[in-house]
Length: 327
Ligand code: SF4
Image (cartoon, rainbow, N blue to C red; front, side, top):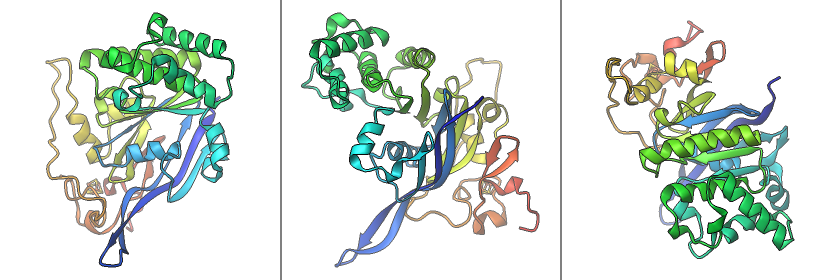
């Protein structure tokens, strides 16, 4: 039976814009604007969109590294937006993050041992020998030699550093991992090794993933479902297979046509995305994608389409599929 691990309802993050002599509130950057989705236990949800679409802000809000402006984040039914700092620290044992740039997220002055034992100290493993044993064990689990426990981050390659980042996230045996562009900074040859490792760990530790990426190609093999974001909103979400085989939203179609196809005999029409991403401080009226959409209609310029279930389990926010013809 599918069980929901995380449910996000109407999540918003508005960054205020101030101006004038007295720093008056003159508007908001709507980085995340009314986003709702859920993640089932053991599944991987990919969150995809161009930079500035709000996917990383969403990921950070789920960990409360950024405070939401509004909305609910239910982890195993409990709204974590209401937890105080101490309760939230405890909750972080269950949910951890893997960052894009392992070099920036690992303290260069700390050995691997110190980096990996820190989460154990925070969560009350007081015995030094026990911590060392757990650190060595985890290094081997992620494919690093425990012989290198006294090494510093700069003594490892990029791929190995990301393995350290993954090991650190796993130290507290979390249920949910939010991976924010975990392979984007790595060479293509190393990317697949890290993706394979993440897949193996998911099976071994019964993990649930939210996998954030700017490229639909990267999340294709690892995701069970994929959500596509544009200017702070979810514009399409469904099972990965459906999204890749039959995308509905014109933005998803454009993103997909940028994904290279390995077989040269298989060709697809390239839909080059034209125009710049509008500013989230001043998003276009109506459908936020209308300034770049080839299928834009008059209604798109005045009315914002809501996310609707177009086919069973397949949601999209686009007037091309609107059900209420009176609109
Ligand atoms: Fe394009 Fe209109 Fe659909 Fe927006 S609502 S994606 S502008 S067709």
